[in-house]
Every structure is written in structure tokens, then in C-alpha cells.
Length: 121
Image (cartoon, rainbow, N blue to C red; front, side, top):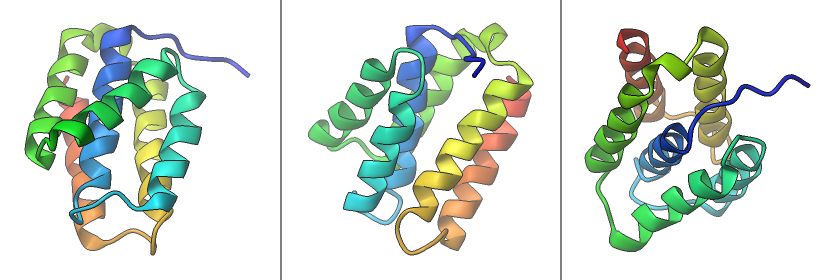
């Protein structure tokens, strides 16, 4: 399987975005946490991406703060984000959202917003 490489910055950004999505409904669901950990484990710098999720949770960061941080990290390394990588990130979010009670309207809108922001990078 061909693995897309990107920097630690992008991995931390992805972890932050996954955290923001998982916290939309106010709390981490065990199913979401498990799926997020599995999917991020397949990514470059997976330890950093996973650490970013739990670090944000430990400090109680808001959804907006985590989303903004994640996008800033990705914007700095925008040249590393090809079409395939962007689609993969959205796919990760869809799978995490689906892990607990299907995708809510709020989660769907969050993922659409992330996709729009990615396209502008």
C-alpha cells in the first residue's frame, strides 16, 4: 500500500481536527476514540497525531481552538497536502464520526467545513 508522507506538523494538525470532531457532542465516545486511534495509527507520525488528540482532551480545549490549531498546522505545510492526502483526512473524519450513532448533522457540517478549508490551503 502506498503511504503518503507528511511532516509531524501535519500529523499534529490531523490529530487536533480529529479531537475537535470527537468533541462536537461534548464528550469523547469510546467507539470514536477506538476508531480514531486505529486510523491514526496507520498514518505517518501516528504517535504525534494520537498524542495531539489526548493532549487537547487533557487541557479541555474547545472545538474551535482545536480546529483552528489543526488548520494552522496544515496551512504551514500546505505543500505536503495533495489531493489524495486531503481525501484521506476527510475519510478518517467520516469513519470516526460514523463510529458512534452514525454521522450527526453537526458532524457532517464540521466535515464539510474542514473540506472547504482544506481546498483553500
